[in-house]
Amino acid sequence: MTAPIAKLSFWGVRGSTPTVDPATWRFGGNTPCLELIAPDGTQFILDCGTGLRMLGSRWAAPNGEKNPETHIFVTHYHWDHIQGIPFFAPLYVENNEFHFYSFRSKFLGRDSLKQVFEAQMALPYFPVDLSAMNAKRKFKEVDGGDSFTIRDSKITARWLNHPQGCLGFRIETPAGTVAYATDNEPGDPKLEENLRELAEGADIFINDAQFTPEQLATTRKGWGHSSWREGVRVAREVGAKTLVLFHHDPDSTDRMVDSLLRQAREEFDSVFAASEGMVITLGGAGDGVQAHMPGTRTALRREAQFRAKVRGVTEGGKQFEEETMVRDLSLQGALISLENLPRLQSELQVTMEAPGTDGVQSMQLRGYVVRIDAGAEKGHSAVGVVFTD
Image 1: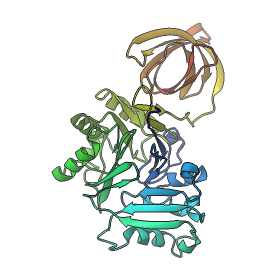
Image 2: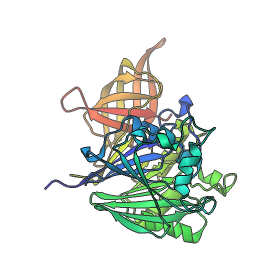
Image 3: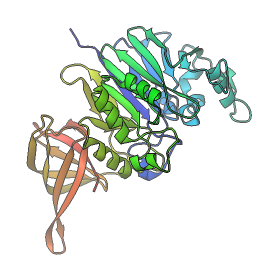
Image 4: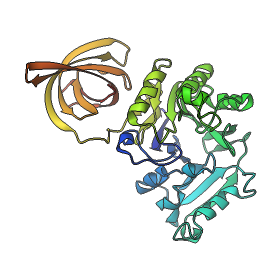
C-alpha cells in the first residue's frame, strides 16, 4: 500500500510588511501564506498575506473537482495576514468554494472576518467591491479551545500571545502533523501552554522567529513576536521533530536570517528557515519529512571552472571531504557536483582555487546546503550552496 503523503508549500514568509529589497530576495518578501494539501486531497490555506496572490496566480483546483472546496484559516486580522485577499484571483471564479475560519474580534463583533473582507474592498480603499467576488464564501467563527475535523484531518485552535488576539492551528493528517504558530510572544504562562499543546510531537512546528533573543528581551518586548531560541526551547520540550523559523522581520536581510538559522541549528538538529517556494513533504518512504528548497533568486549565476575541496556531513551524519569542480557560481552561492550526498541545510566548507596575479590562490568559503538535485554525471548530485561568509 502507498503511504499517505501531505505537501506543505510556503508562499509568503515575511512579517509585518512586504519587502522588495534585493537583500531579502532569497528568503522572500511576501507576507504570510502557506498551503497544505492533505493525503485525501483537501486543500488548506494558512493566512492570507501577499503570498496569497502568488498562490492564486499558480492556482490548481484541489482534487481536480468540478466544484472544489478550500479551507482557509486566518490567524488574526493584522494587515500582513489579510492583505492578499483582494488580489486572490480564485475568489473571482464562480465555481470555486472557500470556507474561511477565524475568531470573533472584540473590536469588530459578530462576523468579524466577513467585516474584514468588506472593509478592505470598500471605497476608497479598493477599486471594486465585494460583489465582484463570484466564488462561494462561507465564514465560520472558531475559538481558542475548539477542535473539529475536515474529512480525514483534525484541526485544533489555541489562543496565542499577540496584541488584539491571534490563533494558532494544529492540523493532524494521516501523513503527519503541522503546527502553525505565527505571531506569538513568550511570557504568558497560559498562552505558552497553549503553544506547547499545538506543537506537542508535531512533525512540523512553524514558529514565529521575527526577532533576535536580544531584541525580544529589550527593544521589541511586548510587540507580540518570538525568536529562534524560544522556538528551539519549545520544540525540545514537546518533542517536535522539525522546527521552521517563520515571520522574518522586514529589516532582516538574507544574511541575518542565515545567522539566526545557524545559531538555531547549533542547538536543535532539524531546523529550517522558511523561504518562499520551499516545499515540505510529510509521509512517504524513508524520512517522515523531506524538504525541497527553492533556487536562490538573487544574482544571475555564471558558468565557472574552479577546482575546489569540499568538507561536510552526509545525510547519514558521516563527515566527508571531496575534491571537485565548481561549475556554476554567483556572488552568494554556487552549484557544486558531489559524489557524497550532504544533508540538506547542513554546513559545507568550500576551498576554491582561482588564478591570481601571483599565481593560483585559495579562497575559503562557508555556506549551507539549500537544494539537492540529480547531477549531470552518473553517481553525482548537483548541490546548491548559499555562502554565509
